Image (cartoon, rainbow, N blue to C red):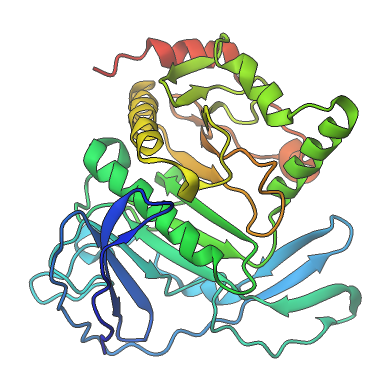
Length: 379
């Protein structure tokens, strides 16, 4: 049953982003966290009869690619596109108990019931995969959280408004700081999958946070490029890439603290990258002013994504944060926002070249995409 006590008012990050957090437990023991702008009593009890969460994840090492792969076969039975009146992320109302026991909420974070990684995973795994001595095995340790942006099932992030979007940013920062402090965590990844075409299995407005026990391939590759650039030129690769973009032809929107631009070698039909003017490693390092400024440019670009075509574009919003224990002085926090839709009714599928060889072939021109997004009327 539910337990725990109300937490005091805390700061997300370095003395910025003050939010009210309440910690409770769901019927199967998973943690649920309520984040509110003002203190709200959270006394609802999860009375569901839930079996314990069973997680059988493993990490398997791919020696050829020098990468870790998460094997999470137990996720085959996770909830898939339920009707709105059966949504597990809506508040509990009219006798129907959901993942959120309260009748209303602002922002909620809870441990995923079908996690790819978990702190309570079975630690007793063989040293290697059967018949593969170079395929090292490790427990699927980590943490996977769901972040519900609003209790309104029909609202999307682009419609949250500045105040609620800012609360979400503070929650991302708070969770990044707390998850980074867990033993064995090497990287924290905040993201949102939006739209059925992307592969969303729950239509309620929400995102996720993964706390990985390894540094992801993308981040490792970027850090290697940063180091090589410094050795070759003595320069800062992030600064040398982002600096020219601030006044270049691919800027979509900008303010005093952030620039949002289409990258010159984009892999996706529509992609915008958001970089703060000041180099910081992660979300907790952002000041109040930088968080407010991010919300301004982010909601602006989301509105452009929603109105560029006849229907809103599906997208992935992907925070690129520094690893927990390495490369932090080199990293420059940024967000990727990208869509696989290349034209009305047409998706960019990752087929032979992209899926087989990792060599992307893009169907759009970056300069044209930037001009198209700038031309969208958002007022």
